[in-house]
Amino acid sequence: KNQVEQSPQSLIILEGKNCTLQCNYTVSPFSNLRWYKQDTGRGPVSLTIMTFSENTKSNGRYTATLDADTKQSSLHITASQLSDSASYICVVLLKAAGNKLTFGGGTRVLVKP
Amino acid sequence: GAGVSQSPSNKVTEKGKDVELRCDPISGHTALYWYRQSLGQGLEFLIYFQGNSAPDKSGLPSDRFSAERTGGSVSTLTIQRTQQEDSAVYLCASSVYRGQMYGYTFGSGTRLTVV
Image 1: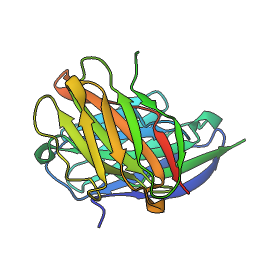
Image 2: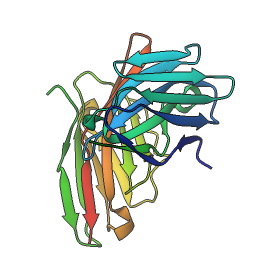
Image 3: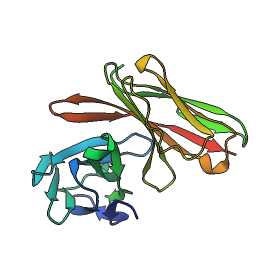
């Protein structure tokens, strides 16, 4: 069973609309939880990094939340743009795993005009 | 350069041939990682180098896979006797501890196709 589960696997939204992506994780304790954006043919790029004591972190139109009690995180995209079309990956950095990143399967977002 | 550089960007090889994938990390980054991303799948950890320590090879899927990091900088991932299931994007990342946190930078990957 994957230790980091994301949902939905994919979604299509209209330009200008908002959307929320979900991430549930089972691994602990973790150093921090990260959201990455991966454009097609590119490597992942960090959007947000949150420690277990943080509840929310914003980066422009991207806002990530973290509930360490329920082991859930979400990434909210506000006023989506065509350039938001990408895969969004939830990543947990484990303290006890030599700081290796544990990746979720990603949510593929397609923004249509 | 300013980022992590991987070469080649694309590689098509015949089944049974050996391939070498190269990663140039960011200068000064002490850790280097290799990940594999199969079509529609998440990233799968392969191997991790940290400074002069013995590498963590726990993610290598078979003994056909090996990696080296020379002089604490450039890394080469070698796949021997390639199989069709080795087709994937191979991503390299380097990291450095800064501001009480590890920062990771990924390369654009090498897309390997085994025919």
